Image 1 (tube, helix red, strand yellow):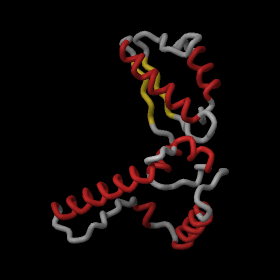
Image 2 (cartoon, helix red, strand yellow):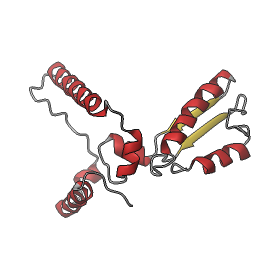
Image 3 (cartoon, helix red, strand yellow):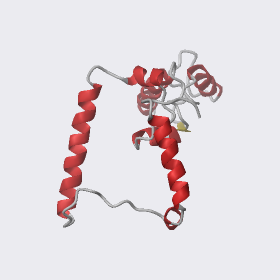
Amino acid sequence: MHGALEGFLSVLRLAELVDEHGHWAGGKAHSCRRATCSTAARDAPKVLDLLMRLEGEARKAGGRVHSLLGNHEVMNVLGDLRYVNAEEYEHFRASESIDRRARFLRTLTEVARERARAAGRSSTRMPIARSSSTRSRSASWSGRRSSRRRAATAGGCASGR
């Protein structure tokens, strides 16, 4: 879907899940979506609003809309902003965004400290689970990855693939 509202609505209409006005018409059907909807700045907020509205409309009709995170949403949550561009970011930013982020990070830090204390660790650093394939990667791979990440985030938000 990649944030393309009209294309997404066309698919939903073709599947007879929404009517001509974009409202749920799928009855007890279940619609499952796993796709990135945050890469096209102009439509991403509209696509997300549509999905949230359809979730409620479907539930009232006995159906469901299941939205799974796409790879770009997961990357954003994890702080990997390589595919976020400044225009897209502005669509989602609110006047209280900076304060909200600071409160979230304080809460996250407090939770990490509490979990560390409960586990008998003095450090607030949480252990990172790594698979054997991750541990076996060479230092040069890790260095290239870090270089790309630094280059991608050097100017704030980067665009492109």
